[in-house]
Length: 410
Image (cartoon, rainbow, N blue to C red; front, side, top):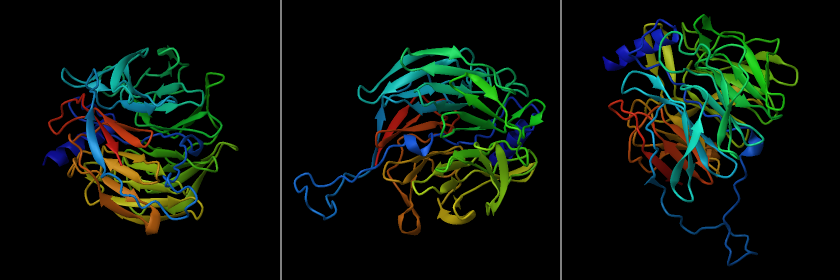
């Protein structure tokens, strides 16, 4: 009964019907930047035998989660962005103890000292926003809601820029339209693509691109084939962007579109998801395929189901294939690519939130359990620092904002 009530209110919120006491859908997608920024995973080797061709067979310690220094402010629906120096930026988010209130504040975590320090304030509150690290190291925070949750909470919520060198924020030029439940990704040329989402007038088909050098927004002539909210946008190795799934506000979408920034054209490809879904995660694997995990599937506008299936989209062949099951429904989770090419799916609203799962692409692909979180959480944020994954904040099972932070060592 609780899930049905929650699902109904989620959809009503997405439809801008105004349900301020409910929780909107999270798309949970993570922007990790283009392939060139990920670094490479090198073999550990045997330093005692540099000329040996034998693989390293030394046992590694088991994977584990460690509790580290907490956030100064408990927050959910925030973003966590890895900076060039290995520190992490937690920006914005929301607290619900006195109604839905957005946060202007930001914090910066240094894994070496295990300390969080204040990182200034944005020009306005942002939650359910996007955050993209630019090539010059700055962080662009995009859209979302402001200081409340209602049917116009995203109106006038623009973009802010964080400069890690000065530990300060500046207000960026306004976007062309207000957006909530939108998708964003950095293009290979350093610009930032933002698409879909909705405002108080409805769901968008439009795209816009931010040019960091000029500080301006522009809009390609092409538009999406269908309006999409809670979709994902993934920059591919060839520079194109795969736009997967989402909802048009009446049903979940199985369709996939590809945007070419070189021409400004959008193509609705032949491949489709086998399970229509929104609020999923999409992770670019090292071989160029895209791993799509979980999400929600809207059967009717008054009936939302959650998804335990996993699919892979292969842009080279324009085909999708099933990629096993995580064994439980995954929604409001995070998915993070590890240095060794595996993907860590952690947290989420339903199922056993304490047991993350690992996807191994090798050998045809498989899922396995890994070490358990110490605190179940959803609507949290995650980021890779070195070979470790940091998860921060979110909601606990009683819908309380969390300040707790954990770090995963594979």
